[in-house]
Image (tube, rainbow, N blue to C red; front, side, top):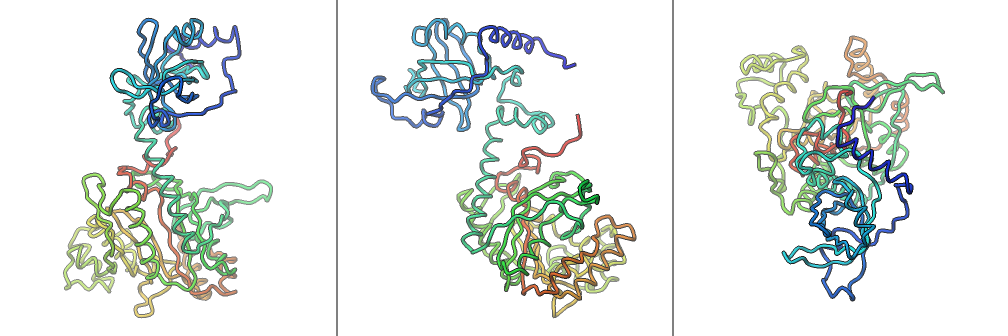
Length: 487
């Protein structure tokens, strides 16, 4: 049984009293104004002023005998109300005196300016719409317990207006991305969330069971493979913004479900996508922040194009500080460098994975301004096209900003024979215990056998992009309902 506080019990009693006379949840509101409309209104004489009907949640309340000042919060922000007994009537004012902070009300009146110069609504009628049965946090604007904020996001949005702004910016970012891609002749599509094989990335999937078909299925870990099938079908430029799911740890940069943008362009290369990505993200930064330079924590990040392009191997030398005397083209050279710089290699006998570990330790944390890291090892890029000049690496890039991967792209592998061999190698890794490796996807290989045009594809993490553009230190700040342990 729920234990109620004394304040909650009083509010439940007030609700019970209201029920004695009427149903206390009216649903006949016709809103004609807002806090924004009041604050932007031209003030004229009362008899000439347009009457507005506002609704909102009480967040401040100050009684002064037969009058009161009230602040309500609606979707646009806060506005002050002036309530006077001889205007609203004794009955309404008596009912109003039982209102509490947290109640949702309807008011009708006209904009005016108080003696202190604050634009407000002069209330002519007032009524209760919803009784708030749980009090808002003490000093409602100061909810700061992060666990409570994330678990009770509905209270967080009431108590912290800056949180509302984060999600307005998030919506604007997604809208502007759609506008950009639509302008470049990309078609937005939707692909399935449930798959028989979890493919398109290296990650451990969530499993479920489809009773009607009596089979195990997986929530998607990427959007990639269905989108490339659509390119095979002749939709030469496609994109999807959707949720993907990875059964892995939670951190400041990771949530088990997150939002990805993936787009694919036929007859393009990974180099073409670097140019497109630079245009997209620098433009977004300029539109959202008003310029190319932003603050992210203690860092200043400069999105001014053009952005540097450097290979992973070269960056370890030039940025990571590993001297040219270490031959990073060889496994032994990477192992020697790792030993010298005290870098742990989780798979020390795999050149590609070892090189990636060395890069992750020595280079990635140093990359603040946007940098394209190119030509990743073949063994960590199972869906990317091999570089014709050096088959140990692929035609791939990652965009790194503020030490975080923001985008991953490559010229797509469209050789079905090569793709089958890579899938088989992945299947062997899975059989050996690698839970992030994928199975052989026969339908995708069949699609390639029909013929995938030369294509480049890219994924951008929307949540991390929002983190950057709202100066949010953790992914939980930009996901409305982040994953938490059960209460």
